[in-house]
Length: 356
Image (cartoon, rainbow, N blue to C red; front, side, top):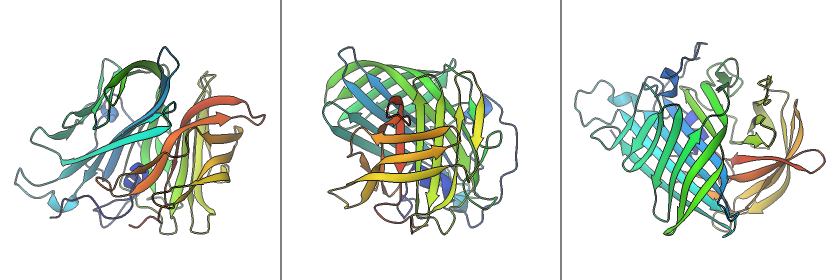
């Protein structure tokens, strides 16, 4: 069994939407998510990820964006093997820091089979580890520790709001077919505190973060070549999610998202209620991919502009999950051009169409 990284150009949501080793995907049954159990891993499902992004600053006003993502992928072909060396689950991880003052993004990645004290994902609560990288939930708070080549993260995330169940009570459609769905919840508006280290220099920071946790057996619709997604913490305490999957001609194949106010009023968006319009684009000097780094996003909660705070936030993950994509710190503007929030924008399928 080949346990090298899967072929194709995969980002964290590509891993979610594609059953990398499964010949068939079945529709997930609706179920009530139970916590803390569902904070943990679901090794019976094909693909899963825990994803934290955020914005932080130090006392002097230096600003950073950060991303920590752990993936778990089930390898069906090895499940019946008795050997402890069989690679039944693969653990991947990505981490990145955007230094706004330095105008640079730093990125690193890891991959290993689960087991032997090298990589693991607990089923009882969030506790994902890959060598010296970890994301652990304890006493209601998350801790991320990343020791990368040029940077380090030691951050604590404290929930300030209840868990946000995406889609229909946590069952989120990702395409026109029922099998294209996932169990999906978010934890926006996480109070963030800790330390960012860049090339040996440490910064004590505070800020706000967003966590997504998603698990699925789903496959990507064959007409989809990529997607665009935003997760935005609004300054008033609200939380906005919006995404669409694109066909080759750029038209929307599927869309969705949600808005939850600080008071807890949730509006889930239908597939025909979200529209992305590209406004300006940046061309990568490395891949020649052209990424729209400014968007107009129309939702039932209003129309917003999304603007990247640094154009060059392209990530090359070919050393782990196999692809090149854009994911970075961005700001959210209202119809009048006033900033109303910050968060992350992800864009896939621009360096090349997704290949499953």
